[in-house]
Image (tube, rainbow, N blue to C red; front, side):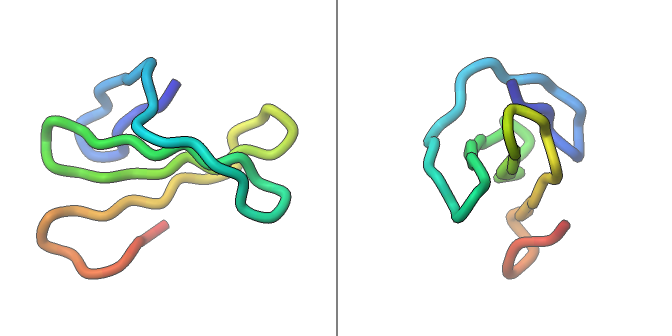
Length: 60
């Protein structure tokens, strides 16, 4: 389950899921226009990267 870092809306369904090294990554797209990725290690959330409409690149 993902939570948008900007508007705090929760999402149960991820858009895409993949493995990045030792992390499990889940990608989400929020209605507010924020794309964010949740990185988990061994089932525990580690960090989130986000990208707004106006920003270039991903930010922690």
